[in-house]
Length: 130
Image (cartoon, rainbow, N blue to C red):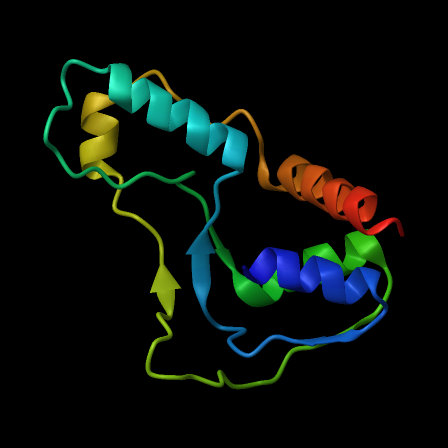
């Protein structure tokens, strides 16, 4: 939800306030996610197991917001010095991939963050007719 909110605010030439700039996330492009889910479903090694999945690369949300803002170069970005935390917020949200790497050795994301963001931004440009 965060990435679409940033993109649409910037494309609409609006202000986006990042409430939790010190939070960290592991991001995975949707095509990589689907590819990985299919691979896990076909695996005979992984039955009735909980496995965390992710890209294995953690990014700070302030850095992510700056990257997206620089790609769109419209709207404005406000990054406060402190987090504006609610009870439901999780500061660091990224998976422990130890079990994943034990069972799935031959998989890597096809889409890096930069390329995935470019595709997502282009998608939102098309559906909003900017």
